[in-house]
Length: 468
Image (cartoon, rainbow, N blue to C red; front, side, top):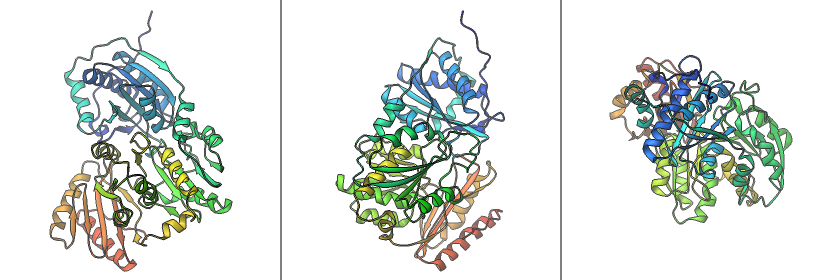
């Protein structure tokens, strides 16, 4: 006799249905019933869309992920899905499972880089990102559809060896490299020991490799400089060629050069473009609106065709498919390879491609980066605002800046380019935050642009000052 589970279908708190995923605070607006409901609805959608229902499933190392996973898997099973569970894993390994196991869809439980009390769900259907209106439709399905209970199955499959072998395919390290890896106690810890044991011609120093949802050493977000201090120290003390850092679910990469300086994504993307420009004729390379103007100028000089796209790994992945782009990225460290890979964001694979390039270069990483024009900039700066007001604030600023002297780009928030440099203000699609970035060719220019941004924020009743 099959034992009934105690989960039930519930309506969603609208705040958790985000642009790219479903995300919220566990036991506040994300509960086990939320996870069960997602399973029932997602299984229904996949079956309606494709007529079949084989779904890959995984979860990250957060403390709340196992119980959400149990509820979600029961919901999928009750939707009639045949679940292929790969267990605890980084998000890119779940994406890989979708291809490797030839499933119709994939669902990952992950809080990504959010604080520990958060968790969420990322989805893929028919090898395409599942986001925006598709996620908003979950509420409608719960309200209007009679989600019939069916009989599905759950099969547990270990694909760690297959994933490690795939990301190492064609990665040949030509000269000895010393690497410091900061796993950040995130889910990439599931595979890191096996991977470095197979990575030839390298000496590896592992930091925070144990998966621990308490994140005892630092928060796993490599875009925040303070989270990179431990890696910087390790690179300098051990005289490493490079340091690589990962976020909580392993789809975003942080990089430190051989001198211990942080190399931001729009800088290391230029290093990746060095190789891509030799493999393709005028390849289309995509970067988001937060990216430096230097990237667009220098990528063009390398023979690439750089294109600016709105921020968000989901729309960028879809644009890659549309344009048959071999490489794309975001300032946040989401980088996607279409060349010799699947077109999704896998920080480990990106790191390995960077190692391969470095092993073929005569210069150290800092010297490669030194070739490009120097700028003065703020880091990607995020600060909390009222969730219900964040888009309204950007709209107000956009209206006020219509007559501002400069080139206005409004594909995502507002980016203003002037002779002194540029600045960007946008609302986050994943958190109750505004994101700003400012860059100039001079310190004086940077101060002037900072003043413009701070004044605009003040006019919208936000008292925020940049620290430079």
